[in-house]
Length: 562
Image (cartoon, rainbow, N blue to C red; front, side, top):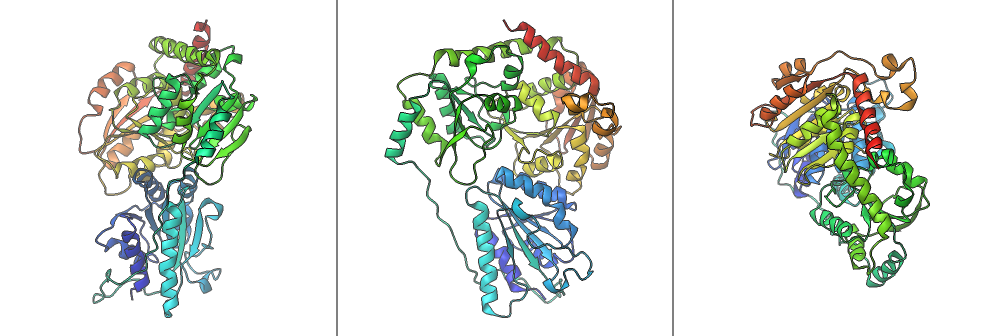
């Protein structure tokens, strides 16, 4: 017997603009799954592995900027969502997580596929809801409608994020042949209208006066989606010498006027006293550069953070002012300042960026072939107006070291929790939302860890995968602690002998192994050509050599700086 409030759940989702659902097979969740599958306005995909399913949903919601529904059965299935739920929470990505459950009286009674699912995601969701387990009374039906409205509204309120609705279901789960699904029943909709938070004229005047007291200003955007107006204003702020703008690659704010190599600058420029700011203005989420964080923590700079609402972190240990506004308002105030910033401060950052940019290309040309040089070659070929997904560990750091990419390329990385567990799946989810080329650059550990991202029936003709395979977790050779340990190779690098060739055969992907720079140049000629299947480039290298190449690049940069 199909329960109408479960059908209404799908109706409410569709009415509130949710059009995508990722389902994982199960019996307890059958009524939920069928409600979404049979709704004419909701597109459903089925992904067997719940961990991959959740990251795929995350990758879709990240692009769509609205919730994607996740549906799973009871028990450990819900636990497998957890890594993606945490990532979505810290990246502020909306997800509507619907977990089927046993009725309350059967929890802790040794019943199959039964765990304690109420509030299972704890503080890693914006809110958890318990769906009614019976609907005889009209108040229960009203309550069910209200819960789904509230959950969707909460996921979309600033800051956005995942919400969880736990849904106890009793047998029978499957409709008889005579039962139909009525999506025309009246449902209660609760809509939210939100205005744009703006500063008053008095607040603007006061902030402008305060800004005028600082001459050494660093503007540091955090991770965010590309916004043309923000990028334009940042470019103008730097161009008019009101401040220095540091653009970590994952922030999607890099321009020709911004500082795009903060790690190399702070690791190789010997004299940094002229580069110390007296004010840091930040907005967005995390930044990648550890060197920049450490540099600012050791400074005496004041820190202002711009954010509409929600919890505000203090990554530089200097937070003194939280301004609830759109960053555009403060950037516009900066452009209205009469005076330019301190010329020595601005020039010190500009000169450092120029020296790094000029020397890096020549040093690369002379460097041995390895991951770093290979990635630089690949970056030159990534199509404009495309999406670039970067896995964690060394891949995203190499990309950050390289800096510049065409501003029309959207950079995406799972830097909420910075794990390697869902990089493939997030890229797959992104691919489901666009016809643009999606490039995934990943290390071997992240790639094989998430191989179930491709275990489904859906084709991905616009996906291109570049695997940097050094047969180990190479980042540990660059971290001072484990790099010095005798246990490095067995217990930190975790050497593996896998090749993506087997996966490519299994899933029918195009595949090319790369061992030399010449092979890479040849392969890149056709890599981005049209295809009905994804293509994989697997670039083989040695972990020890990669570590030496990166250290050599840093040494040569330091020597070549006057």
